[in-house]
Length: 622
Figure: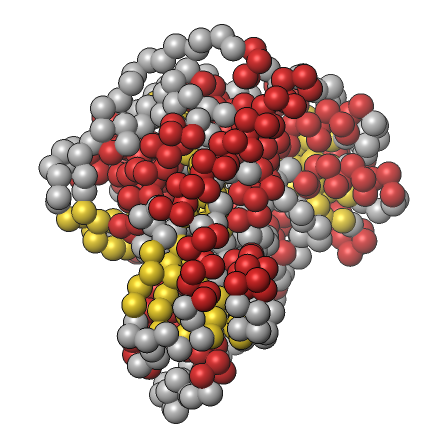
């Protein structure tokens, strides 16, 4: 049995922030969960994938975040406690239903989790999703540690049902991936199957109903404001004085406490956990009792703007230190050093160490790269070979996934990227705007997420480009979750396997070629034919993610590595300068070698070598 299903109350578990969220939902009696995987929220779904059956929670990996939100909303409308979770940009995809669910309200508690990513650890932007709570008029909670992640998740379901309204839980990368001691509560009773009681005026949002729903929404938010003023998650922490009054939320609170304690800064902290609607009366009283105000928040100056507006009447002239004063940055993720640097400027005292010991030898940078043996490398290599002299003029429209790393030398096969599914849509635009060769690339999971409408659009509008669907048989970048093309669902059960080729053909594409990426010659021929086609051409580059393939070979005892015969090697460096596998390296003496420690045994390099100098390392295999 998973430790997350332990029924003992008061037990201490050492949990990842995402695991704490799962535990909190189980203590709340969760019935239904849906997601599309996205870091930093991925482990929530991974955990439900492992324990969903045992926990008796219906769980699914939906094809995208909009779908996940809508199926969970339907469960809530049946009186079940439901949850959907996603990374911050996923809420952009789900924004349409998210905005309207605030109008319809909910029946069973409905929690929506947005995992923001300050610092762009795994994302294309740093957007601050606290704005969504404001624009949609949805109550929001922000935990600061693993224990609060569990507690706030639990409380969110009760808050949602008390208000009849969805609730947003906003986390950040550091909270999702922190580990901390979490004290358990009791696992709550589940409701099992629900029942949908018809109420068209509530759930059918035609304009006549929506106008009424809007008024009800405002009433619910007025009640939420009263709750926020009394919330246990909003509290004042006394740090031994009143010179500085710090208002903070989320993970930033931890850095504030540590900095004040270590530097002996006297003051009080208003720690906000329910951050929308803001407890205005509490904030006004706090402003009046403080000599100087500091607003410490990651992301945009949302709290700061609200505090400045309140301070203008509550205490005109009070000094407010924050982003607008230049003491904090809107960019990046906070850390202890960021907080110390800010308080150094605020207090006029140097809180940073005078000298930092630097090791004599600096570690080399380790930028992310396609794994040794990654099937995407073969695909890009074959495309470049087929383009020949047209390579430099060709446009490579990329997408969200491991394959975006094709941007790096020596492949250089990523020129344009916006968001999930943008590769095919943008490729259509490029094909009409220019006469350059256009190639779009996206993964199998991304195809099901948002790549299909672009195919329909390209066929309908007669776009001409080569569309490669990189089918590596998994959702690789976020942790090898299943997708509709794999034949397994979010609970590990057998499921219908959706054929990418048949979907594409059903959209009207007449050139569809499926090729094993390990066959370099066949891949190159497919690209040559596709580039010569006068309409949209689709290539399905099919081969399992090398990490899964390597694990299977190791388990079966058939794993092998490759080596370079130094007598046959002509030192042309094609394997380095053109192929670029990170397992192949140039030694100081100018000889080329394969690092057996990271070689995944794919053997494609042997096909690439023009002199046949790469062979199986039979000794290593023995």
